[in-house]
Length: 95
Picture 1 (cartoon, rainbow, N blue to C red):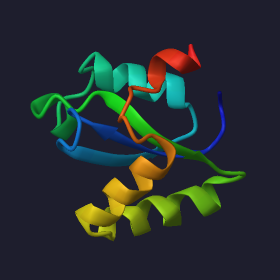
Picture 2 (picture 1 turned 180 degrees about the vertical axis):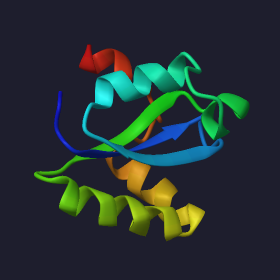
Picture 3 (picture 1 turned 120 degrees about the horizontal axis):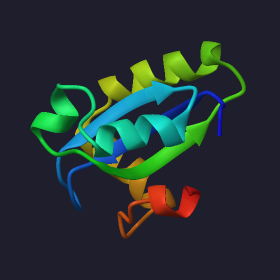
């Protein structure tokens, strides 16, 4: 799945959120899950992929990621729950 993508990870249902952008969603989520890079997601155990959105180019994905990062938390929760109301970890379904 090497395509530009904006994604949101969660520590648990309605837990801590992290928004990111990547061109390889499977690899990037694996890195988060395995704490390959020290930082926010490893410190707060933010490992569940709860939302993602594919883009044609990074030129559209990066501004979308930046916009979502600026959103209020309630807006992010609403975005997640439209696609994934149970906050299931979507990563296993992508394997």
